[in-house]
Amino acid sequence: MTVSYKGLFKILDEKNLNLTQMSKDLAFSSKTRAKFTKGEYVSLQTIESICNYLNVPIEQVVKFEATQKHSIMYDQLYEEMMHKIKGGIYHETQILMTYNSNHIEGSKLTAEQTRYIFETNTIGLDSQKVINIDDIIETQNHFRCIDYIIKTAFEPLSEQLIKDLHKILKSGTSDAKLDWFNVGEYKARPNTVGGIATSSPIDVSKHLSLLIRSYENRESHQFEEIIDFHYEFECIHPFQDGNGRVGRLISFKECLRNGIIPFTIDEDLKLFYYRGLKEWKNEKGYLIDTCLSGQDKYKNLLDMFKINY
Image (tube, helix red, strand yellow):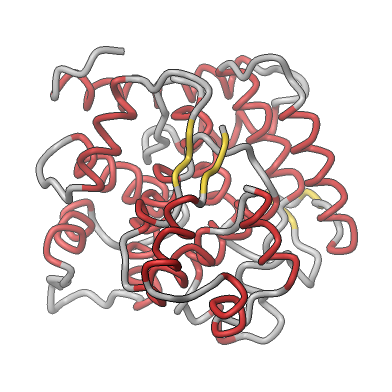
């Protein structure tokens, strides 16, 4: 995957602006400014701030050129997202992935309420039930995360991309109001997963950097390699909260990147999924079989829209 900012420089020229002035106005560091001239990756938040500054859509600012052929599934997702098409595979992917991933983490929103939020940007509530506002915010944020994943599907994994996902997911929540929580940054306090210690805050960047480097240096990224990365990511548990959802979003991205059908973990698979993570070092088959079952659930969507895979 290569990145091109030819569109950005063309728009700057048309508006009688230059990179230096734009960077000054948007408070970009010299390091970030240099990335545009070198054709290096910058975060989606940086791109979005430029789009707002120039009042242009993202596709006019940056283009990602994949070195591999896109799958029919990816092309359909991308096209429907960019054209805001309702009722298609993109629409149903948003609802399926967002509801399942949030629900197994404790969200009280129903599948119907999740659909309602996506389709109407409003929420219909049963007067007898109390819904945590964070469930609503994180549902909307997860929709944005999936858009981010589709847009950056063919980028290599990086710490910045992973931090971006966390920032999008947790922005505006009650956690974001806590000084020590570090939305979009690594955890400041130790945490556990299933009662098992994870990487200490001081080691997170080192451990995650090594994991990414090891993964990116592999000759191929098959289903098992993606699941293995997911397991190792959850062992590091780099953020104070939201690690499960960020980890599953990364898996979704890597499936799209490598032409593999994504998987989704619903309530029926939840206990098997957690058992699989716990037993991965001893028996990889538990988690792989669970994720393959989750893959079958996504295949049902592809079959519904007659998309080849």
